[in-house]
Image (cartoon, rainbow, N blue to C red):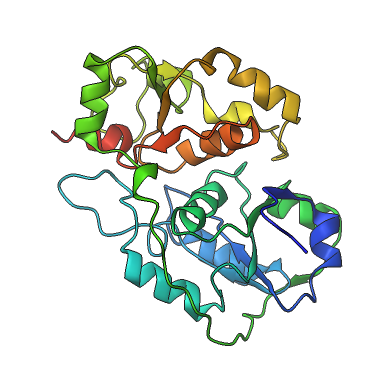
Length: 273
């Protein structure tokens, strides 16, 4: 039985496809074309997988503040999870995308944030599964109603006031910008209206966590990636809007850090004030 196993491979998933506790979720998405993931899912997905959309399911409506992808309304999200058969802390949830965990890690983090710990990411994602020649379907799976009573981990997130406060507090609180280096340095900004980064933030681009093929780099690499952060009392991670930051939170989890928090609004929230 899967028990809080952060990563599973395609072979494991193939061997467990008929497990009645298994719930597979496809999170493929493109920021520039929000309907693309659903279309790709309809063209073909891992046998038995459901689809959740970053904008519609893993986020709530954009407001004047809160960033481009605010965390979803808890009750609405719980209802969505129930509709695809998830039973809290019983279902073995496996999530995947084709973007080096960019969107799947958001769902991985969200489920744990709401108290569901039996969730894993598929190493290699959709492309790894497809390249192995494993079962693909175009059918939407039938499922029974789940049961999901969320238990929000309120201390897993911080708001802009906390972020601003840590700029003035002890250096033991570390702020990590997960975006690409050129966005962090303000040399390029393809999405948000203002370029730059939060003062005092260090840069650790999220793509460092995986290979270009979408496989997680070895555990010793993840540990080395954060070796300079051992003395931090708290590590606050952000990106543009609380999505790819979750890939760094995944890496930190694997490296053994427990003092991590997400700034969900990220840069897009910070510049809205």
